[in-house]
Amino acid sequence: MARSDREEIIAEEHQQILNKEVEGSFEANNSNPGLNQYIHKVVVMLRQKKENGKEKFYPYWHVEEQQSLKFQKFQVTTAKVERFSSYVKTTLHITDGTEAVQKVTHINFIAWPDHDVPSDTTEFLQFVLEMRRFQEELYVE
Image (cartoon, rainbow, N blue to C red; front, side, top):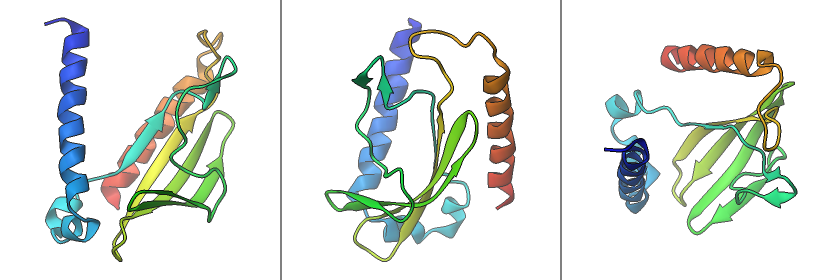
């Protein structure tokens, strides 16, 4: 099986999982605390919204604190934004119309050059080390 085939299968399986989760509510998902202690919602992006003057993805979060975007029954509120030299760490609160709230940490590496590779890998290596520290913190919470 070619590498790209494996990636497509993984992406397809992941989409099936996401579809199943969307069918229920966050309250139903929160009813099992034993399960939720192992579910950490983190999104790591290695691209910028605009590259080479073109929009690369549709923004699903607001860049300003206490601002929200709504997608059907879901509301995504930006609770906190922390800006660092090479990345932005955003805490999002997602609701689905119930009282339950899912906390998602969104980390966007912004120092990768457009259509190129970094001439100095120091910032990216620091970013990777920070992600490892962040992972360790998640397991402590």
